[in-house]
Image (cartoon, rainbow, N blue to C red):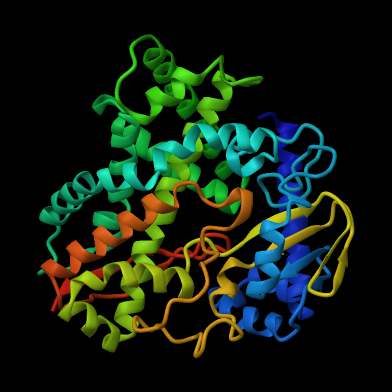
Amino acid sequence: MGLRADLRTTRQLTLLRAGTLGLALAGDPVARLFQAPWKADPYATYARLRCDRGLTWSRSGLWVASTYADAHDVLRDRGFGVRLSSGAQPFDVTGGPVHEGTEPNVLELSLLGLDPPDHGRLRRLATPAFSARRIEALRPTVEATADRLLDRLDVRRGTDLVAGFASPLPVAVISDLLAIPAADAQQFAAWGHTLGAALDGVTSVPHQRRMLRAQTDLRVLFERLVDERRRDPGDDLLSRLASAAESEVRPGEHVTVDEVVSLAQLLLLAGFETTTNLIGNAVRALHQHPEQQELVREDPGLAARVVTETLRHDPPVQLTARVAHEPRTVGGQQVRRDQVVLVLLGSTGRDEAEHEDADDFDLTRPEGRDTLAFSGGAHYCVGAPLARLEGEVALRRLFERWPHLAPAGRAVERGTTVIRGWRRLPVRAA
């Protein structure tokens, strides 16, 4: 990045923040999702938006889907995608519009940044690794990893659950899944945490530099590993992906080395962020609802229900976006070609039309329709089964050991809009 690019990024961030603040002060609900103090509790804003019972137009220049029905329709409608009709991405890493010469987004070649047919071509490559059979086969590995991490925690005196457990667990699991060499494991984890911020955009030029440096370094590592696995494959996910590089995976379909590397990067980012914040949000919800924690104390086997209810009540990924590839009608509104619809995943679980007493965290709640916490349609999160397994094992093992786990000091929120979770979550064994 040169001086001109730095100045452009700084200018974009300044204009974006000023514009967002102005709109938030004027009452625009979308702007408030990205602006303190309102973004600390997005659910109040979601409730206001759902009162419209249809798509809402924001003065920031996009539509908002806040109800389950509208979000479900947008996510499953093949008339929507993630790119503009020109093939360009609608946003750059600052969260603003893409300009010529903008630095590439770390997700640009991954599943999150592609539309059909390229999206399907890469998704078919990754999907077999996350089948029900393969995920269940990982259970002993996840359990052993959870036990090893819990053995190290000094819960009697108090410990940070995020740093000591919720964060390293998915790091260790994805490292094992990709067979990352021990010599690279520590740096691999550091790059992964840095790039996790890509899901929320950059906040400054130094932040962007750190992200781009981590992206470059991680890419070099994956390029080396892909080359090694192509020559000497093992029984791991990266070897299976590498074997497909530069070959015809289906008649007329080829996958490049660059695409395999980008896919591996996405698996890393998604594997880190979703599970870490799912575990943290679940534990925090149980602490805030002691009558529900009592149920788990009596039966740690309810861990899977805790995961499901957390995904509904306070999911780690709060929103996503779709672009209309052709004129569409959703929620009684006409969406023009290339207009963006912000899909509020976090709002759909609180939709009163879908869930009685939707704001309550209730483990005895009857099963409802499929959650949209992992998105939906063509871009449904391919790693969702792994995140659920990790969350279930983590919570079961945690409360089997310390059924009276309690808060132990001030928790620190992540403070971001797209990813909702906790940077620090002190706990102790009561």
